[in-house]
Image 1: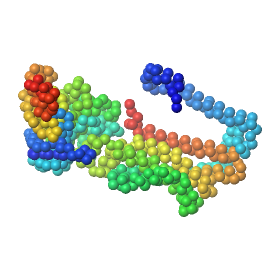
Image 2: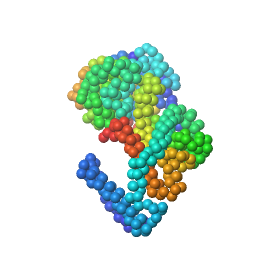
Image 3: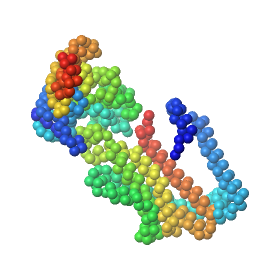
Image 4: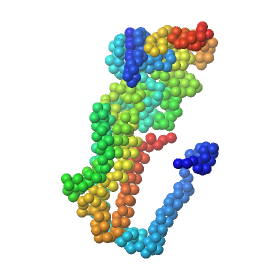
Length: 266
Length: 278
């Protein structure tokens, strides 16, 4: 469904060229839920924007559903870390924005928008404006908005990164429930290993900048995922395995202090 | 400046407790209003006493009663109305024209980085130029009718809106622009559904300033050359040494300015209800 081959992306920060991604090969099957983890600055967000068609790769090819990506596509949705809700619109009208931009009649989408808001636990909050909602509620609205037009590919860029742990777990559950109903192909960027393991079929670890997939970890837990699984020993074990792989990467490039840390973890 | 004992005491004092924000009660609002009115009455009484005690001629400073009398007579006899209507027309036309051009120009400048770079020295220069100083030139070009006053008023109203439009239209968070790009919104959709609503608080701030400046613009335009309008009336009153009429017209101008400002502020309250939430 999503395929990146030999992707390289550089951008300018002032007068300094920065190589964000280099030699990225990654394939995500249709209906697969893949979490991308890695240190901040490893190009995870850049990778999502390349798949979304918001950025063009400097080199390499990106395909979504067997077609090369040349720009934003109607069947690819992106949820941002920071709220992108429009403050002057109600929750319902924010969810309806994609349909409105597309020129679809409002009546056709209202029922679906209301249903989506109910599915993310916001029934009764349709007329509230973003400033009257908590951060977690705002991200629920953003999720409903991204799902309005039933995208085949859902990209999420640390969507719950700014939320507290309890709210984040609630939103993880909400996301999985929505995803189970209609399995879109998901690429989920996070820096939270537990979140990655809880949500994904597969966790892909990126190298530090320039980023590329370094290792892939299959998540063996059954779905639907439960809170009991999240706090099980096997779950913690997998998180630790990924954490060690991350620490090893660091020891390969960092100074002696970091190397000692990696050695201890091994 | 030396640091006095007061400053050092303030520095060592604990920070003030944060008062819980509470909706002011009706009683408090009534009390504040009563105090404001009492202050006004005290000032007027002081003015009156000053005139009487110093035995000032009404040519220099008329007592408040005389000013009020002139104002009421002028309104009752219908003498003031045509002047008020003329000035109001100039203010509203100039304000509408200036703010429309300011917002339109701001949209163009905000839209094009090239335009912004090319025009910015001229915008700075035009900001530095005192617009009111152009009044004699405009009267020379456009005559003594409505046109030069509308143009000068428009010029005065134009710049606050241009500046606020450029700032406001560029205040959009980059993620929101990415979202609109992702949704494949047209430039027009991005403008009307994203940039313009984001800029509205800035535009209203500009409109409030422009509204008050518009009254100044129209009156100064009339000072330079007009046979009708409140500014022209002040000049005429000066010629006939009718100081009481000058005060009456100034009072009327102040009330006009307040009324127009409140209209814009009221529109802002309605349109920007979402902006005041929480």
